[in-house]
Image: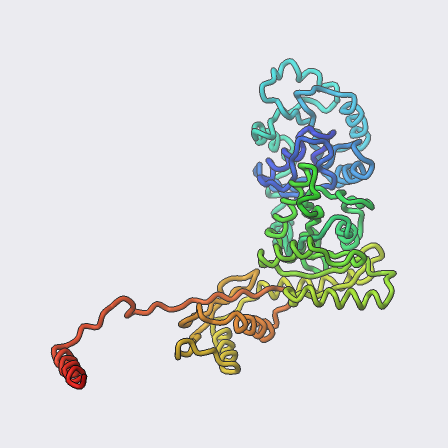
Length: 465
């Protein structure tokens, strides 16, 4: 198996910056504010000759629930990178954490971060007191010392050790599978749903908004299918965002929509559909992502109220009528198991190949059933269609006067293509291309005979006048 490396330490020592540097991503939210990282974040290390799994953790002793997530990551890890701040020096908090780590009998490497502009000889001696041998000096922000660091903690692992496992798993560790982003407003039950799906307290849940501050990527497997579940921060209206960290969280949530294959959009049944929900759904539609709608907190509602909610959702969500609705209780688990069939169906609908002969035959059937209108006495003609890409499905249609096709006819074509191709949970984009007229801008040069004929006609017309 791939070695698992946990990044550990007190708050604001640069753990997330180191995580981003080793994975060569910007997955972890980095802000100069303690407590930014709350849930453990997984990634694949790029720096170094051997692949490895990296876990970013929150600062210990900042919050009881964060501490639980951090110590669970340490328990999962083969080795621990204990990160300390060279600029601040050794603290009582560092000493307490070192004592707790030694009790676990884990392989620990002491990482001395933020060494920029510091006389190492004057600070190194103090950190030997932590009892983990010689500190490894690095600058995560400037990406200095990372190769030396990876050579140290990967010394007991090699690429050959993982070759057999990688071959056996056939890409499960190399690919992310179906990426599913859980999106919605704050406190609608996104993290509760993620924990229910995973069957463990994987992300922090509290009965107030703002518990999740970063987008957490969680790989897992279900029914022999690989997934990456993305738990995101709740997105509120811009006027209600007060803290800078929440602005960064919103950006990460919107990036998760762009990065995923399927959006699992969570709506609070008790609050109903809000304008902010509609704005987020519009962003999802513009991004072209497959969509599954989840109405949470469904348990305990009176039957007449349930019917009214369904009626209101059906009316206001006509623009995403391709999405399947699920009515669930993430807290109690009712209806959660049925979501995965819709996720897989939406993913396969968004990515399945569409052949040119199939699309052209369907185009002919659609236009023969309801003919295109006349424009200036000429019938709009659509000649053939082919696929223009996946996720979302995009169909390119070639013809003449395509810019004159009425929007109502375009909607009719979208609905018919979607129905005939059995596309569920994914939008369908139609693009029209008008062929070039080879005679455009050219004048027909008359022959001498044609010129004489025109002159005779002109004399005849003048004579009648």
